[in-house]
Image 1: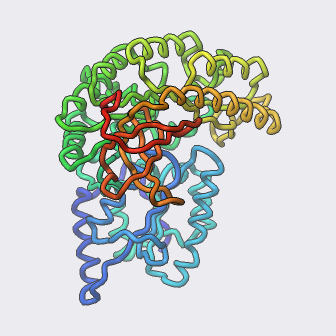
Image 2: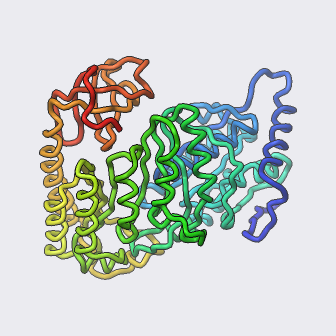
Image 3: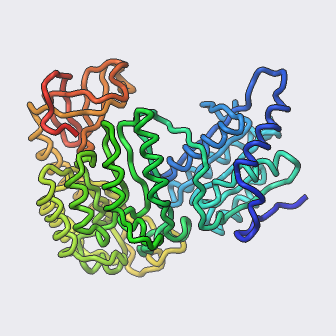
Length: 481
């Protein structure tokens, strides 16, 4: 029997809940009398959106009767959720999938699934089809919710299945298995309409599709009721949330409605786009007693010429005006950003413009990347690609400058008390715990198991560029968020 390619227009043939029940029945029959449930192993690459998708995949798998395992050799179902933002991420995913060949040879009944952004690219689909014949199911980035249906079809005799476009509908009946009980990703939209010239996301995630606000608020309320202390609203560009709904409701309105939920929790969001960061949104964040005092505002470049080539649709003046208004309304805000070094055509003066913005804005932290051409994007075909050695030099210069800025900013926290949501012990020293402030600062302190998932007050005794160190205290924090 040949591979089956499922087109976007094919009917789903009933709700996924129906297929969840059918797969559950098959698993119950096959494991009857064994006392053992089949395992599911999920490997996730890439961004927070992928992590959120994997939590939904884990919830679906659990609903079908699978139990999570830490080793793929113990799994009957192996899922690799891939990333396409950089070539390196794709190669890591392909390497992981390659290792499952031996598991499949040892246990042919193991079902191997590849999904995510990498699988949405035609050349990768062909590669999976030709070089990885042991992969049973390939799901595009918008088709992961159809896993129960395709798994049922595979379990009942169909061969390899390719479902690469799940359509525009956003199902609201998907079970979720959150990795943590005290913090959660909450997707509010999918896709992107911006088409930055270097970015593959619009091609692999599709156009912007917003969830209904009542569904988002209901999920947030349920999370808080279960004890969640930190909720991050997710989207490729959360600032454009609601535009496709055409109901006169935007991201600022959503911030207000989620902030109105009773409970002691922090509200975060990512990622935002400067062109859509409105004063209405900034005002809503400033007025919220739940919104974390952290704003991630990707710059990418400080050069107007490069910003135009990137198709970012804002300039230095617009960006700096937005930053000024954010600081006016929230003086205690922690600002972070993304910067790409070595974009095609970037001259020394363009790079100096970027350094100038860093000196002016004084970010708490920068996530910097050396430009990596992505197949199928306009930037990959641009002339004047910057040599690797120059990109490396500029990257190191940027990091050196930002380290100095971050270290200076963090010094002001010495002898102050901060409120920290505890994540748990360090991997190298079990008595040293870590957590994050409202401004997303990492804090290390001597803790105990009871602190995990709870807010603790920490008095800062020592600071460095990217972390604060202190001890727990009964003193009140300067910011109670």
